[in-house]
Image 1 (spheres, rainbow, N blue to C red):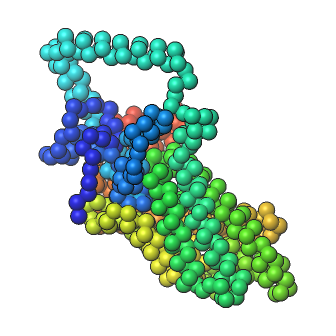
Image 2 (image 1 turned 120 degrees about the vertical axis):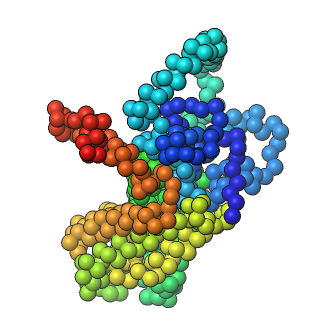
Length: 453
């Protein structure tokens, strides 16, 4: 299936060296990594192909509209790791041309040659750029309020659109799922069933991905964000911001669901003559393994479900495999979530998402259910929804990349030296930030050579 691409958009992660035109990848991996610095616009969305293209499926636009809406039709060249469309192909820092010493030496030699041959052209170019910089600076000084925003909230929203989208999507998906689960449990099956509850979770996430996938990518799950960061180059800082937004969304959803079904929760606890935290409502609001389920079984149930979910998402986002048609990815993800919850949800309650358990659990604590809900089943909320789900997601991504994926953005496909160097860079940066062994930080290149020997 062919995928449409816009030829005029400069997309992907910018390389340190700018090239005049896109070069086809050929020859060695070193040459390929150099050329890939000019890759096409990556998008990390779960909503389907073209979800981030504002020109797709656009309705009528008045000719004067853009004059009064300065933010309209402004293209965003940054990558988006979205579950709504094929995942982007980017060049990781360790794969870029210029990362290795010989790359930088080659660039310096080329630069010296260009200066000797085109000295007059370079001087003229620098003069033009300097003049443009002065004009832009004077324009900002003369009209400091001309920033393209109508009001203060427009400016705030512009800088927080991605986390706001993750918060909204998580709130939407989990509110639908939690309310369906509470409806089933508090009505003793009269207003729902387990298959219907599983479908509500799946299609709740589908609707949320369609709603927010074009902006943030619609991850809505910490395990997905972490997996995309490790195996597809999703920036680590944005990953942390996304997880924080997802947790806030889960807390919001837990509060809304508890408020909507508060009367039903009180009634079912009153009829059973037990506290709310011991009623069937706790099985709906929180996830917990059944009393007869062994801890190892509970762990690997969550591990397996997350591995299947993330492996499937990476397959859907791989445009070299068999990606679905435009707009179908979110729908298929909804079906996958439904199947995973239906097949593996009985043992543990079907979490597969750390935020899904933590948000409602915190709301239940604030509702007076007691601190013991964080100590149940040997602190299940930590080693189940977080440890098992994230490790399972990473394992699923690793298996898919080892078996099928061939893109250079995955560490599995790094050349050996670049992989070693990337690991050394991360280790040294971490040691510097934590101030561990500051006096014993080895030379980077020598350290890589030692490992090669």
